[in-house]
Image (cartoon, one colour):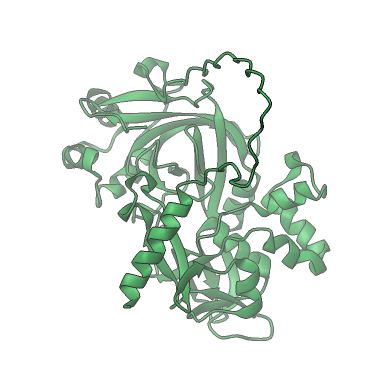
Length: 395
């Protein structure tokens, strides 16, 4: 049997398994000779109506729309026109002739787009806005006494199976594993990877396991080398295990209340409890692999494949806000220094970014950006700005 046919058989069995299990009555139960009472008939519950995901609004109903200078958000979005998605090809082409000033941009947007306010299934128009950034960590290209925490490229033995090749209803679902004997088994979790190592290239070595964890959470970063140069790293793949925030473990262990969980508080706890760091980190089975990126002064590369712009790129759930779209965000800063009401570009995704009114706000590169990103857990609202005459994204 070839590896390809073995994989196909294994994937088929796994897809069937993932499609759901149904309990069946025991075949060994003896039939009863006593008449059974008729079951009472309970009224069928009426499901609560699900709120529409998109609600059309006028431009006047978008808060601070007239006050936003628009230029920075527009320029961020234009970067994505290097790789325009289907619904944006025509507008990207026409946008090239628009003058880069607030009045011209506003006129173009109001003429060609319609604002749709996003609403959660429960009818709530407010959701969670978090922040992320591109960290810079000290490290080395070779292992040293100080730098001994590996940052891996994708492993050579990891295999990815697209389950929707067999079951269309599993669109977007992928299984990652490796061949053991003649079976495809789930890829190891974080604990096994750290304990046993991997057959994978090591791109760099960092000094602290917490740095590796937060590099994986952010999805990109830079390694500061001793000679003054920086190595840029970007997301390449993941081990297929579900992502569980390490902060949740601290809450579950009654170490921190949920209201106090932030990147800063997690790092402070880890520094004070070095003997429990692996216990903390192993609570998240997910493990991210990286690739090297060309040197550049621009932001890291997002899921759209273009550089992110500090303060004007967001990560979203692409099931609600398609990559490459324009959006408008209304939220507050985590340092209480005013509100954020501006045009933004949907150019990235994230494992924890799921839901309708949900976004991750990109703050930029370095410690100052990290200070804001690590503390950001704000309420916010979102509007999808969608091309007129184009069908809205399906549910």
